[in-house]
Length: 297
Image 1 (cartoon, rainbow, N blue to C red):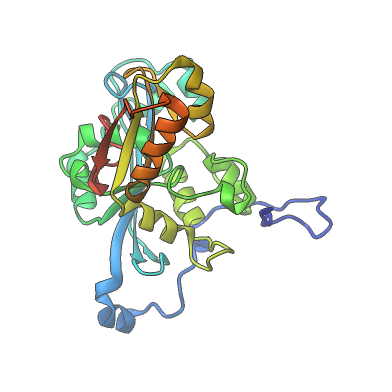
Image 2: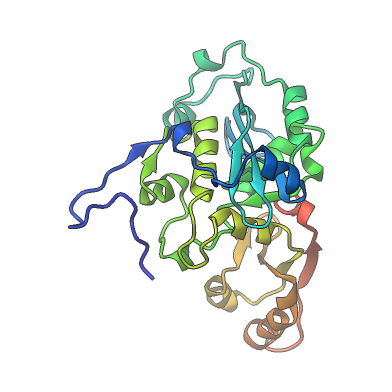
């Protein structure tokens, strides 16, 4: 299936991109105060988060910018109902920002000097949310969990992994590329801009289902999953594991991936037949929805 590039001209020779503005967000015509009163049971609050950091190591690197965009949504359809007041702030890390990070984010030492994220305000915002979303939650969540008092108990969704972009004909999962294919752009690698870009992206309707991408993410985020660990696997099985979307965990020194709970027996059977050539020698762990993308998951 080829994705219909939004903004591409009929002859395919030009592409028109629009800089994302709040006015570009669209809400269903049925949403008003009367509907909200009558359907309070389906209205939920979420927040899209993005962090910019001094590096990739959760244990030692620091947040230098945070962007949070709360929003209301219809939990049944995944439709975006309203935008809430965002929170955005720099954070002085107390150490020089490397040239590599400045090149990537545009954030300099002067920009963050003297700034501080008010994590108590962030806690107040997140405490009202039913789900927190990031484009790579495995990266963003550990930084947020370390700094706040409430996010560790929240369900997190990951638009990078919990929306099947390839099935929709999209060959890249990068946020800036997905945005371009959907006809818009923003200042990438700045926290609030990325958060708004992601929320706008999730509001687009999937041609296959007729529902916003957000609905697919919500359905996946609510599931209990299984963390499969192909420990003690023979070296010669690595290509089989790669082709089945296992990833090498350098810290634990095994191949691993996350699967849906009802696929466990089939996965063990495949591992026994293809990898171990006998009894299953790996391990698996059940992951509750609120534990997805934690640092130790």
